[in-house]
Amino acid sequence: MPKVTATVITLNEEAHIEAAIRSLAWADEIVVVDAGSTDGTVRLAEATGARVVTRAWTGWIDQKNHAAQLASHDWIFSLDADERVPPELVIELRALLAGDPALGGYRMPRVSFYLGRWIRTTDFYPDYQTRLYDRRRARWRGQYVHESVGVDGPVGTLTQELQHFSFDSLADHIDRLNRYSTLAARQMYENGRRTSTLMLVAHPMAAFVRNYLLRRGIVDGGTGLMLSLVNAYGVFLKLAKLWERQRLGEDPAQTGRRIR
Image (cartoon, rainbow, N blue to C red):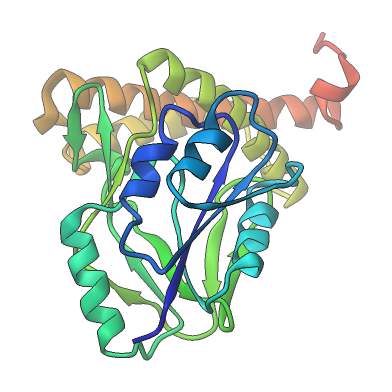
């Protein structure tokens, strides 16, 4: 049965880090790479027995790959601080590892706790995440957003859910959408993506219909409606910021220029 190192990257995660590490008690080793937290993150992580390394922030992808390099074992389970590994998933992971996994990586569905309830509708679910992987055959890849584990060969799929406590409030969700959409627009622009005023209208509307009707946000009542609207707003923000870059031909955040 291969040994597993669990990795977590952090920056000011004192509200989450203890619960995250407790959910990793099944792992043989826990490595935390902290990017210079100014709250109690490091103290709390060290108190749990995790090995904590401080490293200046270099981006999600590079931080996660660095954490994997620090591991004592080749099999890695990567967890974000706002995620938890529930007992049902631990049982499935142990059963998989006991059989000497044949593939280089395994993904699992992720369920998010949002506005007081677990969400298994809209674009939030099943939100498959590859988190268990052999670092000899896989590594984190991506650009500015949508980082993911790239595996050499096929990826296996587990059935039990990873739990996600991503947003503290609606305001927190919208604040993060604003930051995320700036990075997403930059990535799309540099990759040659372009938009139009028609797309600014049509794509958010289509996103709402997909979330609320096709992906059954309607069955989650007011929470499903709110989430469907916010997801559509996120699509609008990405396209609006991409449109802004097209007009300026450069990064508006760096130039401070206004669109006339």
